[in-house]
Length: 44
Image (cartoon, rainbow, N blue to C red; front, side):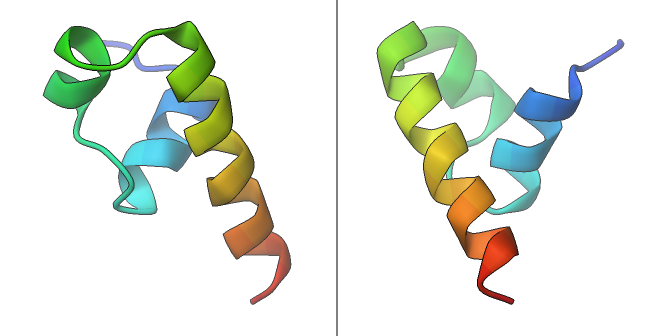
């Protein structure tokens, strides 16, 4: 399965599992999780 870099970043940061992203969260939630992941990476 091919996963986008954006999805991979959120999952690799431990913010959500792929299953969570597919079933629990909507696109707005995903964008917020992505922003959190990017901020975490920037602050390292």
